Image (cartoon, rainbow, N blue to C red; front, side):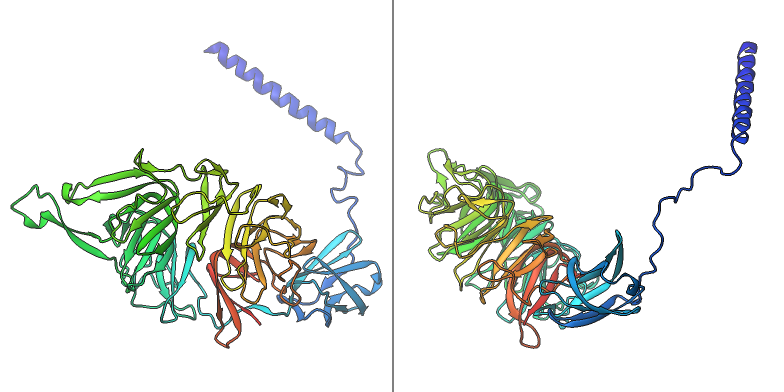
Length: 538
């Protein structure tokens, strides 16, 4: 203990000696400075500032003359550049407090900037007026608190929304909103849907049936608290679960009610996720990311223990209206299971008028036949060799939208070529799968396209994470002509953030052409939105 104490004293003395030596050394240095100026080499202030203290620097259409309030530029005439949302702008004249410009033809709404002597001065937003704008009469201001995966137009003009949300327009406190909600044509919450607790998972799609009922699909195990809705189930016209009462094995004869149970009337489902549902000839076709079909043997089950039958089925399955598996569709009867299907994932599909189905995603073959991220299956679920996709897409196809009026098939995603033809993430196909040479998509930078749709007018909406198109700033959203060129006066909007999953054409409250877009949409034209917007396209 004594030795330890002596060592500690010596260490303390040594540390004190080092501190004294450092102090002496520092004091012996020259007294005309204690170090270099940390701001040395900095540039002198230029005295330039934007006078507009608000959020707007003005507005105008391409070709307009506009005046921007800026101080201190007169001394630097001819030595600076002015930009609207990163597009260089012609300066016609200036004073010491104003700057006169010509709004450039390719500009979109965004911040103003001045570049002078290597320095950048950021100003307020300049709004480009054009034919695209958020519809102020659409009342979905807050929207949903989660993804809206699909929107279905109902016969009364209202809409049904499906997704992963638990609230819409802050109405959940009064009525449960779990994955399904009804809204008016102007985006307001509509009461009367009897979905109860809704889904315990995510709804991705819904289709109407001739009976007036609906089929809904997604990733779920129950609807309104009742088990047996495995990825797909049927709802009544009012949104309530279509149910039936079944006889069960009763292990407690003194309680007769234990021999009965109320269950989904559609006794069929999948192990996995249903992305799309099609109704053909009183049968239901499901497409998605699943690995098997399942149904319940109620006659062998009790209230607390259900016996489930499982059949391997990959990505495609067809069922009868009661949920029974149709073994004539994509089914290997010899091995009592479905054929292999795709060797990856399906992101989207579409049924053509002849009931053949085109599917896209991330895969390389279907039932053993080469199919690079796109395939068409015939009416029995077999590979269709007449589909002219050739070598397909050299990257994932994230979305596919078919226009029934123009006949176009718009695909978008991570590919750079389609059947050997350059296509930077967007291509237009004909109904037979061949590429339409009339549409030539340009070059994207800063990201990629996640959704593209051709409207009935022929205009094309493209959204994604990109920053420029053919070198022109387009921050996640743009409108193209049918040949792939930018549409004049339709590209005035600012920043778009999010992913579009579905677009439907409609009209605004003023009768102007419009579209409703749903998905994971956080911003449109630099304004916060809640996953659903209505946009006027005048």
